[in-house]
Length: 137
Image (cartoon, rainbow, N blue to C red; front, side, top):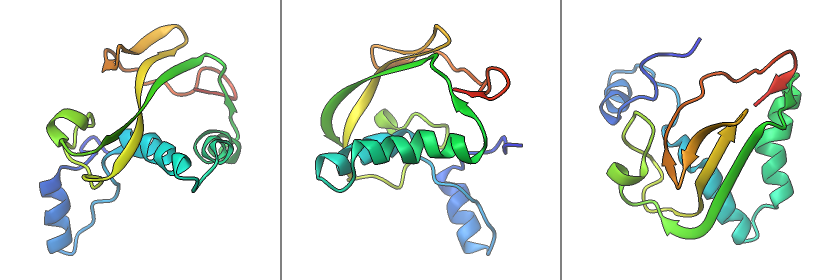
């Protein structure tokens, strides 16, 4: 079950570090694909490997099939991750990736026909991951 207090704020992360506690996880999941696309642009990883590492292999490991009902389109422009208040969309409000170069921002996303991102803006959430037996979105 997921922790309702995640992703953790910067204050919680620092508190855990200085009190021998733990606060697992890295905020900034919204930058994973743009950072991988930047690595691809630099020749450090192939598109096939990105797809395998982020989609097909995780689905295989947990025994699910990828759904054909997910559609995502990207604007593949370069940018620097530099403004947490503007670029971070997770509830943590911060990212350890400040200053890094990235490529790509989601412009449109739909799952099972339901729009989640339109014109680059998050407009809705879709909490369901498994659509039916052995189908993963």
